Image (cartoon, rainbow, N blue to C red; front, side, top):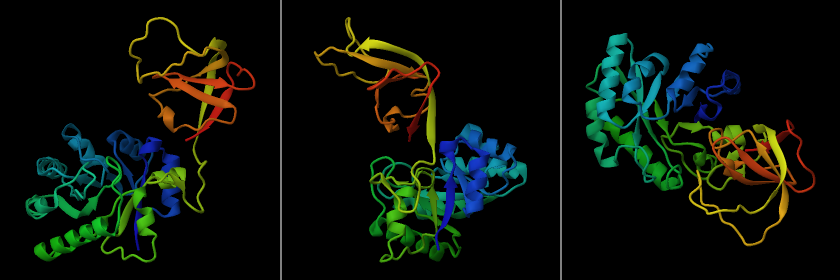
Length: 307
């Protein structure tokens, strides 16, 4: 009884991935960047799309024209959405996000009633539902307690204002263990926003594979642009690096070191799993430095990493 919003942000709005998710049965697509949503619209993706980050005020008009729904926490922003929606002669739906302990986005529970009262006064704005987000900033796990609180807030809103909330969005891929536990009652939660679990086949709370899913759906491929024998330790006076403190040891030796054309601008180097025999030893914005244990990598050869 829980529908799925397929989160697209890791794919930069790839229309191929969007179509695959829609064919698989997601009821909507979600993305945190309006640029990605515009890409999907330009590629004729007509399915409902949810902006899953609080709207940037300077992008309000783009959001009204491209996204069917947006998650919101600030009445000031919702008022701007209302004005833009009136100007465009459309109705824009919102999900009001509730803070349940992870301390990222959300209205505090004791402020929900007043916020909903203000929202319902605004023309061309439709309160589609409420939602919550956990496990992203402080790793607070979705559980029966905080999910029951979300359901209770939904019931309270419906009872107080005599409305029906179509969507109660419990959270993200971190909610899967809770949602798929046969012994719990999911209450009013009827939607989850899933990205990592679909794309990587992993449950993010413990980073464990989800039974029945592939964990090698996405592969990062990069070309070798330098390959040389180099010492293992730098020399000269050391200051700060571009990204992180480098720990050095007194032991010096020589290794087959290669540079790949990928870096922090493209991915999180700490999230890459190198092939057997290749070790990631450093990264900057555009370079990934690896060592090869057995043989020197050829210029132009490709190295494939799991994410």
